[in-house]
Image 1 (cartoon, rainbow, N blue to C red):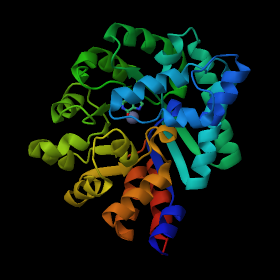
Image 2 (cartoon, protein in one colour):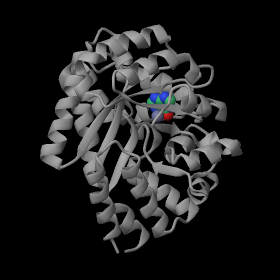
Image 3 (cartoon, rainbow, N blue to C red):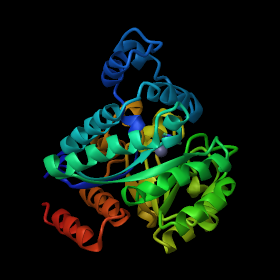
Length: 333
Ligand code: HPA
Ligand code: ZN
């Protein structure tokens, strides 16, 4: 199999995707119309023109504005279902999706509306497409720890449907330490924990996510490379990093894909995985991310297989499931 065929055929798990970041302009228009909500764009082309981000905050401003058209359970279902159809095309067989409840509850949408719509899509993805999934609820780090506690309370009745909690939104100025207590409470309640760290923020934030939040994975983490002691720790602990190449390029975390550090991290033994982050905004889904780094960095077929295996190993599926996907990857020529 050549490299492109391998990328398309190999089973993958996606561990870093914000469901609100999969909102394609066409669907945004359709939902805005049926909910009779005005959006400040006249056409899909105008929406796409607005996607000229230069950093995380300029993206987040547009991302939150887009999410404001989601009101009803069916809207959340349609959003997630559209993403699952992309998963099916890209051979993403398992996904652990972030959602941002505060983006919706702050607008008066009930927590139940969000989770019920997403869960129904997850159930259909399993029965109709054979794709397994889990939900990870993120706290918005630009908001207070106090309101994160409220959101955690709201999530408790849905504990069985939410595998973990995460931390996203504006990173710089909102270090993991700000959320130490709410993460401790989430762990006590039985949630797994992850956090965005080392995307725009410094390596110090990755240390905090490890030591204070006691995360199971680091989301992004690409700036860890600036700190050799941190690198040694990540390697020794086999701590997964959920890397998002097209996101890093679009938000100017890297200037050029040929300079992306994912291959260097991989060669040094860091447990890196490939993910799409906010694919509707950043120019591509899972396979687009793989193709982009494979071409810019001249990845070998063995490196692609390792990245795909890493995605299952770093996921929250059972060891039997991990073994099953590992065997399928090994069986590919
Ligand atoms: N970083 C931080 N917050 C986010 C992101 C991201 O890449 N995507 C959606 N919320
Ligand atoms: Zn993210």
